[in-house]
Image (cartoon, rainbow, N blue to C red; front, side):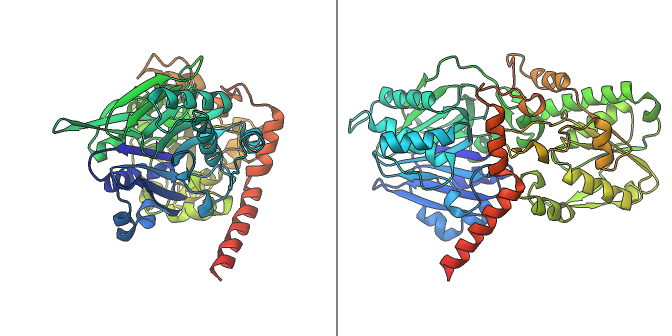
Length: 505
């Protein structure tokens, strides 16, 4: 669940891309990168592991010259956390091509073999983003033309869409030509278009969320449609074309539950408003199903910070006091997207601290956006009990997560999901709460559709096990389980750390 941005301007873009990535930092904290095209048609690249503010120092920003560029913040779901996996990736042929990608390809292993044997293209990392870049490069090479027309680029995107499957929102730059953004035929991952007009000149920007447009001074135009490609030449001409058959909007519903910022609008849906609706519906479910317990609840407390709007609405529905019982250290990353279990466990205590007076002697209803592995929930509950809470009730704004995600969210192993194969009562016991409630999936869908009724279906695979691309079977899930579970990740991290130390020496 990475964050991407691209800008075609008539002025330097380095600071605007930097500012946009800061606003997208919540989408990935593992690595960051920016590439620009300078006046001599050369790529200027800086990428490294770490937060945006750590990766880009003044010396790097001065080197990132040019009036067009793309940027990326990485949240790893495949490969490892070495800097070689960071984006953007680039290839020198044809033309000079660079790309950033948010999502996950579900047929990556087959594509890698095909790409090597047919196109003789070597992929140097385990990243499906580098693979995607080379597939696009191969199809652009098929044109055998020095000067590409917009239709040539759309034809290459169309051929790429026919090759790849899964979830992808991408932005690419082609030396001496322009920038192209495209989205998978199901629109699983978000991508928006913005523009800025000044002195008769129109500049364009693409980003994962509308907040990135706001900070860079761009006006939101529209979402990139599922299967659509939008091409902007470096002199500011814009072209668009539908490049996939049977395109249909099926956005990832977890964007609205957890990933996106509340001040973003994605596919016509205010993320903030959707979360308010989630809280209202969950509050009514609690009132219906916990009739004998509701009177015992003394206070409603959110687990910062995605759930705050949800918890406030639950408190309103139940007519209970709403309090902030946890203080968040804003300098610790989001624990769900930490790359390993050990990091997730150690980060919770550094991330949150209790306000003991809000817990002592009270029956507390804790509210969170979701429960994934249960690691964070269990530790937070134990913190609340240590602060003096008598009873702890727990409400999740999302239904039970029982299935792996294959479209760019780090939920690859069903055995690491606390709700897999367990009842609500069993999960409640494991996280040490007196009572637990999950949102109904139908209510979750209605909460988002309330803002945009034109969205008829969502990717809800983590709740239902039904994968929108139709190409996922048990063999595939078992394979990614072996590749991406925490044990496998730990081994890759150890190997990567060894190589970095060895190289330094």
